[in-house]
Amino acid sequence: MSGPVSIPSDLTEARVNAFAIDRLSQSFEASAKRWELIVYPSLFAFIILAAYGFYLVFSLAKDVHYLAISVDSNMTVLASNMQSISENMGQISTNVRNMSNSVDSMSRDVKTLEPMLASIVNMDRSMQEMTHNTAVMRDDMSNMNQNIGRPMHFMNSFMPW
Image 1 (cartoon, rainbow, N blue to C red):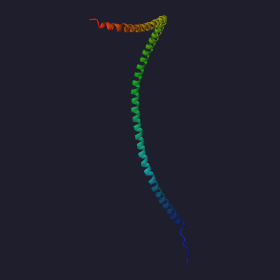
Image 2: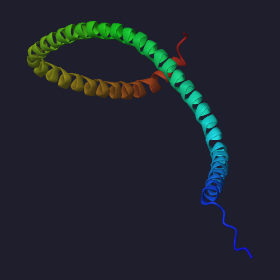
Image 3: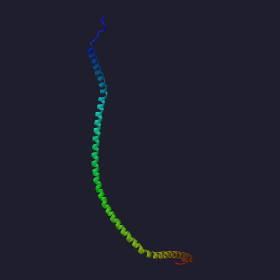
Image 4: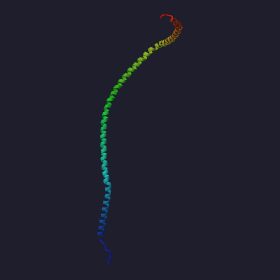
């Protein structure tokens, strides 16, 4: 009888190495397919996001350009308006100075009128007395009209006119 067949160790080792390499190759292919399922869609999404990011940056740059043009034109208008305000402030300052002089002159004029105030108070009292005396005269005239009017009315009926 013969015993177990012995296979030369070089051949067995070569088969084991070939099997291991074949298994490694299959494992790598399976792993590569899994990575392809992840990497390719991720790469596609990255390209889309990069294009959208470029669009946003380009749009922002365009908007900033329009903003800079608008600010420049508005600053020009603002500068001319500030110049007008400065000139108007100078005129206002001159007018306030003239008003101050006029108020000082009015103050001096009022001081000269103070002595006249006593005369005006006396005039006021005299006018009040005149008003009172006129009212008394009116009452007296009314009484006289009533006293003379009745007999004259009776006499007028005899007169031919």
